[in-house]
Length: 62
Image (tube, rainbow, N blue to C red; front, top):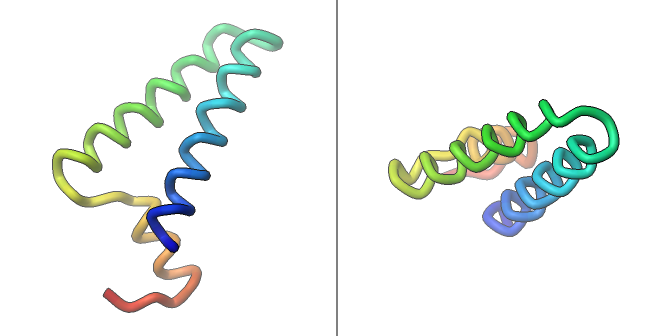
């Protein structure tokens, strides 16, 4: 459940930031890059801040 939520949130962040970059200001692409870097870091280190946050919100144990 948590992994699915992480993918949904990351995808939503990317889509929203791309739309904002096109409609508002190109600098929103920095947010897209930030999400991408976090996904890359998560894949390498097997640690994800969003996972930690969601586990606390939903009170899920490891």
